[in-house]
Image 1 (cartoon, helix red, strand yellow):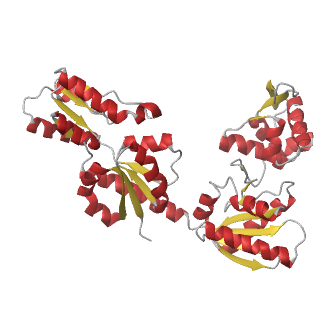
Image 2 (tube, one colour; image 1 turned 135 degrees about the vertical axis):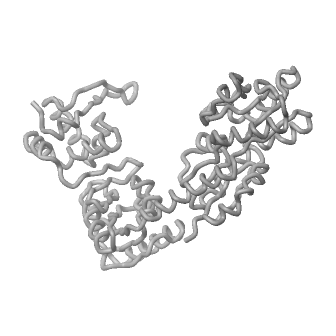
Image 3 (spheres, one colour; image 1 turned 180 degrees about the vertical axis):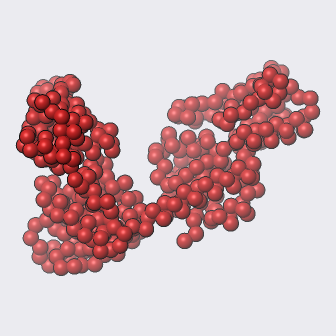
Length: 438
């Protein structure tokens, strides 16, 4: 399938990007998503970004605005940036068009590339715009106004002779005010490099998506045809709502789902939250068990899905689990807090489990939480959630580890003004792995 790229760009920048349009079209399908001002930018992104395999922003500024104003950008993405060669090329053009101009009297966007202005121009450097911090939304909202205002003030005070900026939408106002200006923009070669890199990233992700993802779904309690009919209807409705990503078939008392690992990764927010499980539980008013499996072909993915399904059936909360193609158990997949469980605990972990009467699998989950997600501090409630055990069992695990020097209380917290304080523990997962406890 041909790669599709959406280019989110200021309206005036689109004409500059089209200089490289023909060559980019050789790599992928291109469609422009233009905006006229920042008020439009967020709505343009939200309404169109999901239609493409990848996104290119016309510059660092619109990219930073979306990343900070809207949130995480889920699609593969990049932005057109001025390289050092683009700045040198731009200044060659400026010096040709304005011979003898004093470089220090040029007001210009501060480059992110490493540009040696002083070395090139005998110690002279241009004057730079006061640029907003990328995370400062208030400043970003006013960036166009601030750029125009700073330009006009310095021009009227006779401190600059030329403005050079990436903000193409200000060209009309500079022209109307009689301020000499040039628009800075990446060269055709730079834009082609950017587009090619993004296409390469998307293609590599597609190659990674050749794994088969299988799912096994069933009601947790006794099965009857009437209830299974409703479950089948809900599965079909969920599938339609999400763009028909699954092939669904009934196999005895369970339903089997088939898709690609990339599709499953997208739908489950990186294997951390099973929306299907939540939807079925809400609509049916009862627990539904879901197991996902990944594999190089259907047989191995179904085998892994069955192992994950059994884990879902065994768990008290009946949340979804996944077994990946490496045999790692991931789950429970709920609220973005899944835990990767490696297949075999170490000898040290097995020894601690034996000595302290703690499940080695639960100890291994704690190790994985720290190694893979940087989580090594727990309250009893935290640990109960991650291990899918009772609050009492979680408290016992932490107390036993503390008694033997593998955990210690770092602070106490109060749930509210009247509630009893609870303890927060740091766990030394190195000791859990090595078995080196007192």
